[in-house]
Image (cartoon, rainbow, N blue to C red; front, side):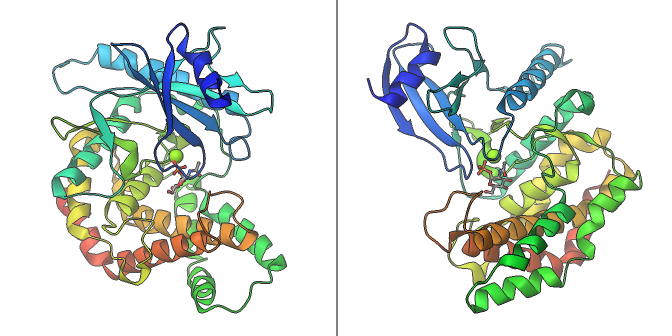
Length: 366
Ligand code: GN1
Ligand code: MG
């Protein structure tokens, strides 16, 4: 039995593992789809957690348990259970009843159930898909809006705290000796011009305008599972970054991913645009579920959240390019530079359309 199959077998109990293949397009963890001999549940997802990024994987698993328990309880008590199927991935245990498996080489593995009859789609398809993606994030936030965020551990310190990414970037700049390159120059200038504003959400949080809530942390388009029969969103996966944060991080992340029709991996960075029609559709879907708990301040800062998370991701990719690609997995040397350019072009397009985006928020606000 090869090494990976042997690891998968730890979570498969008596069921024989018949197939295993790389799965998804994550930038951090390694993910595999495992097939087992089991008519009821023939697949599960096996992941190697990147412990360079998640240095306390046990806390990631603890958050996942608290989250899953809360949502499952809540779904059972929902007044109208007929609404629509909503699936929550289950953590699978090893034969020794552990929620993870540590290999001899120290690598950390866990398994979760596969949501059947559903697919993950990398690039937004159309307006209906957009509405579903927004609905999914709204429902997700709604289901945890009564979960006390202090119950969740901070598993990734500084995640989405833009001023901290900026500090790191400045430390990196001190030692970096990159060759002259117009793309690099464009990024340097782009960041330089937006440094002051980058505090905007942290300031609002510190002023008590925006509260910490439990969030997903990474609700991009391909983390929303779409039912292959109905094309409806039926769940959100990738729960590693469920932790206390601002809902603006999630809304911004969902929109920067959903309103970029070329996708975040495009080489055609100069053509990248923020699609405001899609923005309207995603936000409408979101607010159909989330308007109940949003405050006036939340609405006021939505535009900044959308602009900031695109900028922040560009900054994170660019910094990683400068340090030699140690955080995000890359397929070629300038991959993170190209990804940064996509996010900066998207930010530029968001800025150019500020008026329309603010108007969309006003139109949709109850
Ligand atoms: C990373 O690994 P993946 O693709 O789920 C990153 C997100 C970024 C995303 C960009 C923990 O997520 O913050 O938005 O790449 N996750 C972490 O694709 O840093
Ligand atoms: Mg993720």
